[in-house]
Length: 170
Ligand code: FES
Image (cartoon, rainbow, N blue to C red; front, side, top):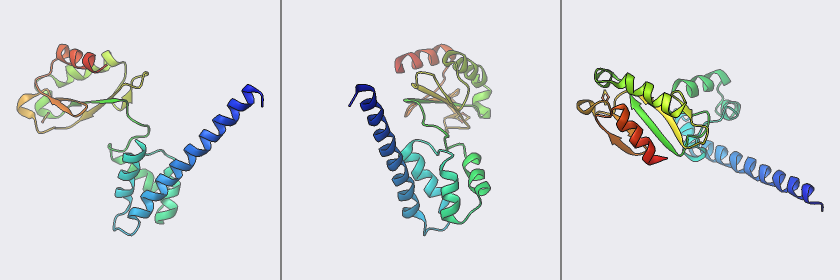
């Protein structure tokens, strides 16, 4: 077999097995929760946990399997910020924009983060390393502005401290 044909066949096999794994995960999530009351939410959470996001391709499948309209499923997926359309970057940075943090500089911090990373909230840097998100209270209000980098919560973060945190993580 010539080399380019071999490589093309290899890519096709990989794509088919990836598609199969995706289908298996979605079907597994449906089967695990279908009998529950309000099955849609646990199914969506399972899909997000296992696949890293809730791809729009799952909407018609869930609608059919749960006997819901596509609009109903789409409405739930887009209403809850937890459900991502694409997988997050290697590290997620969350900036609190609730009132107490806003009163001590969260907005300035948010602008600094967007400018430094070159992305808006809900977006991931081109290199796939950082996803920037906003949140509304970590319960760390006395130490605002509060920022979570990965699993670690940081208090009294100003733009220069944020820059240092992002640098360490890159
Ligand atoms: S308002 Fe930011 S942690 Fe509570």
